[in-house]
Image (cartoon, rainbow over all chains, first blue to last red; front, top):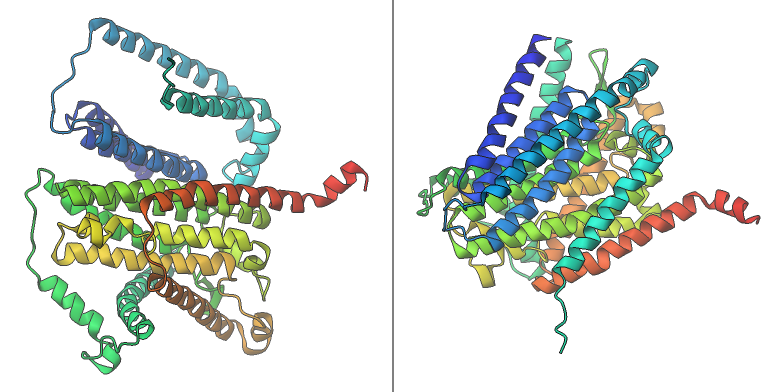
Length: 170
Length: 350
């Protein structure tokens, strides 16, 4: 038990440290690299919870995502200028308020999902295996699953529409 | 934990590591020999018989070269780049089943470092991390050409990973498992997946070329445009690590191709050999079969390198997004329809 605790402490320290460094480092590329390390240590947490599938999917999804972040950082930002961007006070206030709201929602989710998770633990099935996971997702949680995919689709179409150049009307 | 398991696994891990390094070393030799053969030349023949000691001489040369560093503000990242490339290239071999099992000292020894439930996803994950070595190294070199090479490698990886994943989904729908050991075991005899999923195999093969940064997809190190691409500023063994990682990746990709589509360690008549000559001989022969298959793929990689010229960048993106991804989606749909043909026929009342 103590080894797992030590690993957990080290991983948590790495996660928190790199998460803070992501925000505080001046160089955007360094930020992105810290973000990669942060996500990998979160994958380590998943492994500690014995969910290999979640860990490896996390690595696959986020390594690709951060690679795109890298590309955008290099292409769109002026890397030589390492000045802190000044933001108006209302933006900072908005950021704080939305952070608090997200915290509230997350806490509500955890409190409400605890009894449901407890039910799964007592059935004794192997909920780490992909077969069981897929069946649960597509039988019991079919509707939320489809809603999540529609959300992703809408986000994708929205991005394409936004990035499309508008035709000049004369 | 059982101490014998630790010893057993360490022996297997060291053996796989040694095999990967040896194959990467001799791939450099084989590449030059194959190139010479295809172009009607002799190839390296000075060091040892048939030039067999050439890789050793090359390694010695790379180690003793002067270590040059560019004037870069990211010295640490400049060192980390080749390290990531090399370690990810070596990590993938952990999930590959090199054979079924040996029966030694009264215990069954699985010829695999670890049998992950999600072996195939592990392979995809590690490969996608591998490009970070190129990206970080190319960026930290503080050089325009390196940066362009790195950006090309990254966008190529992002594009081809989609097609690779989609092509594997069709295969997974058939096998119903992600464990490479079970996928190998399902293909006993000549029941190879390539006969059921030829389209998936071709898409995966093309994507494997792209992921290993081999010609015709080696735009990241395109010499005619970018000097040396992402490793322009590298010298000595750091450069050697990048080249070594490329050959190790080629070896691993060939092995994965052989395991997924060409039956892995299976060969015709394996069950007969198990019954008559014993488990050990059958599985040593099985390892030999896998080795022959993967050598065939390595030869194919080299053959293509000296046959097809490098693509233009827009052609590369066109092939990835407009041809391979739609093809693999069509393949998934066809596979689904064929798997459910009985249900569909019953639904329409045939």
